[in-house]
Image (cartoon, rainbow, N blue to C red; front, side, top):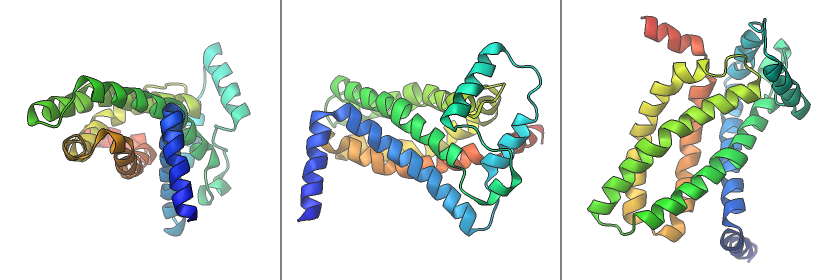
Length: 230
């Protein structure tokens, strides 16, 4: 009884306020995925890489423009900067979790809501002539800039002086991984799933993808640079 009422309320919310509903859903998945990653690190008794990586980054700050100084102060007020404390390596990095919540709710959620709304209206039908172009447009038009926005926005919230370094190092590997994951997932989505259930299907698939994305984000940049050198 309770579950049916909850589902009915969710359906009403999705119908009355789709943008807000989808933004909250995506934000929850991004936040939950990062929380899952950190929980796994704690259970495995591994230090959380985002904190140690950001400690190294903060030590590289020498000369900053007034704009970046203001951005860092603003991020500090919001509690988005990692603490430079080795004791934090074994606890949850709440600043990192906040950053994923902000990205999911205020960037990824609204962008994906508008994108799929346009995509379904422009490419109507489930024939192969419709599904294949729709799939290619989704993967090769939306995904690259979305990956770039992800790394740059996260770097800005982390207060990094060079917001492009991580994007340059990780973009290609992230895009390749997204192709392997999303092309078959979206093919099934566009071919079999009705538009009314599109967001629900993508949200479930997105949770798995965000866990992969969190892993790639948490991998130190130096590892990617070493791979390029080798």
